[in-house]
Image (cartoon, rainbow, N blue to C red):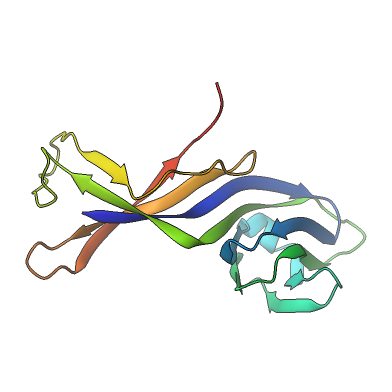
Length: 182
């Protein structure tokens, strides 16, 4: 079993009463990509005829232009230049006079260029078998120390379960590390 610490992320629930919603975010030189996962429930999605999802750079130039489909969209900003960006959602109400409140869930994930490896062992061995419905104590080590994520974010990654004979990934489990000062 091996894994990777990918970066840091935050899940938020948004409620909006306007046809435009914006969110400013900053990208440092250590970031490989930024991924926004947007999930809107049907009762909110059905309030609109169209929903544009854009990412703009600091000069307000659109760098990603897309639209929400069936209440879901994933926007990926690859190899961004360091600086400020804006996620902008523009929604066209079916009945503009009502301007009903709408909501969506947003997961923002910042993937680091320099990944951290996770090694998993059982009783000192990296080759072992896990059985269903059986608790098993596993140990992990990281290839280097974790750095503190921005406030409100958690460090995330995944552990890959591999077939011991082929080395192929048969399953993956997400992991989170919640760091903080006590």
